[in-house]
Image: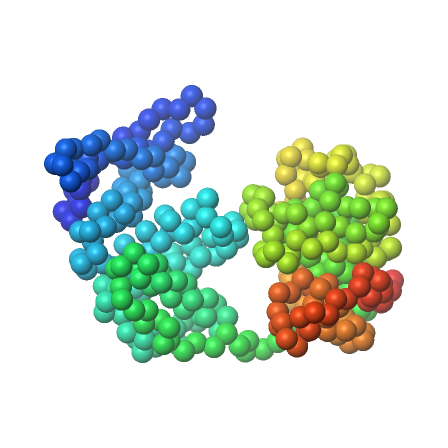
Length: 377
């Protein structure tokens, strides 16, 4: 059954079989050239797995039609829903420059926060003060509200690039991202007590997180070939998001990091007992998936880290990012230079205060790390 579209070319939507992989939805339409000749066009919308129903596939087509009918749409009213669908199709495609984790976060904010309130609003009728009032009403942390505000702004920037809007009202929206309260940071004694309670390989994963500050996707994206045992360092080449390997968060995130001797010894001990020890095997491989995939970070956190923290008498809220914050705090209090801390944390800024031309040598970074590792011993 064909869905009616009044403002756009109709076209047709069919399913094509594929010998390998899932069947695909194919959209076909006719274009009329300047000479009056009609040309048949077609484009694959996605797989049946991506769009299980015809209704879902037609929604993707509607976003595509905005490109096909640019001249017709440029002067026509458009809703935030239509704009969001087009933005997701173009900017959140698997081929975009955004990491899988970033695409997931953007999609979640659009689906759960932005569309429930703004879906049917015309893009030309949204005002800054109404968006501010909406953000104020949301029961979320300031950082979450700021993220929704920024993504809504990105939608308007997208509309301006296509000529569907001449201004971005969200630029005038005020929303602080300042935390209501500071997140928990662990003391050296608490990290040490936690490590004592943890079984392998959870212990080694937490030890690495607490001494290197690796983000969870980088940590569980490690393969044995990334670890340089001879030179005591690790190369960050990928980040795992929902079991999909992608690029690290930033270019600076790809910097190699030194590893304290305690971490090297823990990794060597774990490699001796794991079934998956080849260079291309995951350091924290999943037995359930026979080593083909790494462990899920949340599974390790819920099943092992949080119960171990409870046994150790730690009442603070612990997540994987807690260890990154803890490292940054301890580096600062241990006397490490600001530049050394920046490079160990692989932060891109602040530029001037950290010294654009200053370079912390590896020895300085290794000494700073070793001091932190010694606190956990």
